Length: 196
Image (cartoon, rainbow, N blue to C red; front, side):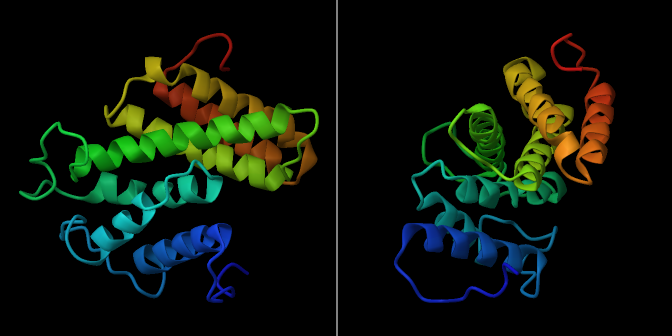
């Protein structure tokens, strides 16, 4: 259904959707520009990263677009281009890409939690659950790979559990999502009382 909209438009939301669709298509769909042996900071993937950086917004579609880069962060082997970045702002490299993915996951969980718990807001159960699970899994991956510490994301992980618990009874796959998430949390050995 999302492959269809290819209309030319200047609307910000439609440009954000186009970013997501283009990133998905070029990374995992028919384009498949990325190979794990090539550096993501040169060529077509670098262009996608630049496109994502051009949106200075915390909109969920942009955050989801950043999460598409998680497998690249996991699979890419060390190369001279991306692992020798300086600690200055605006540098491009694997550490900065990982930080952007972690930030996107954290912010997406916060936005979904806010929409799920607000009195006058609505988010469809499958959208809320899917966004929470993919964001939570992105954070879990980041924690297990030691890109970040679990202590910085206890609230995010707790919010993810709460979102999945709220929506579990409201759609057919809800309880499965919650079960998978609790299994992941147990594997990470993060057991504050308010998470499980």
